[in-house]
Amino acid sequence: MKGLFSSIYLVSRVASAALNLVAIAVFTRLSSREVYGEYLLGFAYGFIAYSLAIQWLLAAHFGQQTRKHAGRVANTVLVMAATSVGLSLIVIALATGLGLLRPSVGFGCAAILTGLAVYFVANEIGRAQLRVVPVTIASFLRSGLTLVFGSIALFLFHTAESLLLALSLAHIAAAVPIFVVLRKSIWADGFTMPLRQDYLGIWKYSWPLILAGGAAAVGTSIDRIVLEGFFGAAKIASYGVMLDFIKQSFIIVGESVAISYVSVAKAHHGDGTQGEARDMLKLAFTTTAFLAAFGIVFFLLLGGPMFKVLLGKDYLGATSLIPWLAAANACLVLRSYYFAQVIYFSRSVRLELISTLVALIASVAFSFWLVPLYDVTGAAMAFTITQVVALLSILVAPSTRRLMPVDLPRLAIIVVAACGTLATGMLSAFALPANMATAVNVVLIALVAGTLLIRWDMFDARTISRRLSPFRGRMAG
Image 1 (tube, rainbow, N blue to C red):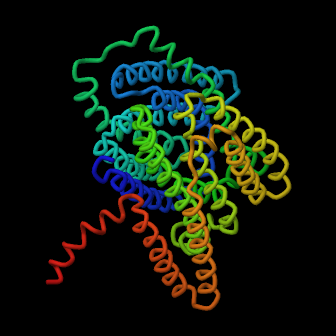
Image 2: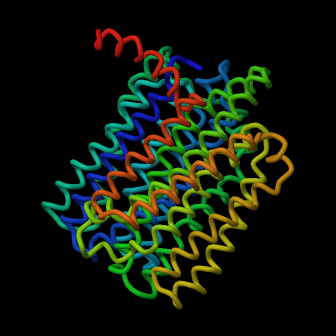
Image 3: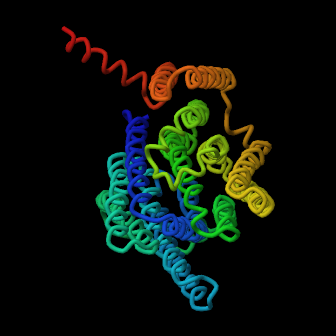
C-alpha cells in the first residue's frame, strides 16, 4: 500500500460526512417540508438516470483498467460517458415534452445527471490512478460547495429546482482538481481518441451493468417514489432526510474501503500476485464488517440525540425508524463495497445483474405492499428487506464465496464487541440522565472501536498511533 492513503481517504470521507451533516441542518431549516420533499424526489429520479447512463461505465473502467493501458481505457470511458449523458438529456427532454415528467422533475433530473456524471467519472479515473491528493481535495470540495451553493440557492429562490441545480454545479466544480492532475499525467501528451476495439471491449464487458445500475437505482429509490405517490412530497421529507444521512454515512466509509483496499487488491490481481490480493481483500472484509457493525451501534445509541440537534422538529417524525434504516444500510455497505466487488476479480458482471434484478423485484413488491399499509414505516421495512435480499442473493453465488474471503475469527470478535457495546450503551441510556448517557456512549463506542482499529491496523490506525507515540513522548518530556 502506498503510504497512509487508506487513512487519508477515510479522513477525507469523515470530513465530508461532517460537512454533509451541516448541509442537512442548514437545508432543512431554510426549506419547507414540501420543498425538501420535492428535492428528494427530483434527486431520486436524477440518480436513476445517472445510474442508467454512467454507473456501468465506472464499473467498466475499474474492471478493464490496467497500468499499461490506463490512458486509453480512461479516454474510452470519457467519450462514452459524454455520449451517454447527451443521449440521456435528449430522452429526458422528450419525456418532459410529452408530459411523462413534470417540468420541475425533468429539470432536476437533467441537472443531477450532469453533475453526478462529471464528478464520478473524474473520481473513478483519479482513484484508479491512485491520485490520492486530488481525489481527496475533490471530496472536500464536493461537500463544501454543496453546502455553500445549496444554502445560497435556498436563501435566494427557495425551490427544489434551485437546490438541485446548486448540487449539480457543486459536483462539477469539485471535479476540476482531478481533471487538472490527469491533464498532467495520463493526458500529458494530449487526448488520444479511442479505437473501435476499445469501445467494443468496454461494451462487451459491461453492457449487463446498464440494466444492473438502473435496477439498483430504482430498487433504492422506489420506496420514496411510492411514498410520494400515496401520501405526497411532504411525507418524504422526514423519512428521506433521515434515510439519506444514515445511508451517506455508511457509504462514505464504505467508499474508503473500496477506494483504498479493494483498489490495491485489484492492482495485485492484475499483476498476478494473488496472495497479496487475497490478504488485502481479507483486510477489506474485516474493515467493512467492522464499519457495518459499529455503524449500527452508533445510530442505535446516538442517532436519536444526534438527529434532535441536527434537524428541526418538523423533520423528527421518522426517528423511530432508525433501527430499520441502520440495519438496512449495514447490509448495503457489506454488499456494495465488499461482496459486489467480486465482478472485478471474476471478470464477469452477470452476478451483479442477477443480484440487482432480484433486489428490484423485492423492492417494488414490498414497497407497493407495505407503504400503503404502514406509511413511512412501511417504506423503511421495504427498504430493509430489499437490502437483506440483495446481500443474500450475492452471497449464495459460488464465485463470491470462492473469490471474496471472509475472516470468520475476526468477524466473531466484531459481532461480540458490537453486541457488548450496544448492550452496555442501552443500559447506560436506561440508568443515566439523557445527556450523561449520550456522553458515556460516545466514549464507550470510541474506546471499543478504537481498540479494534488499532489492533488490526484498519485505516492505518496502528501505524499512525506508533508514529504519534514518539511525538507524544517528546511533548511530555
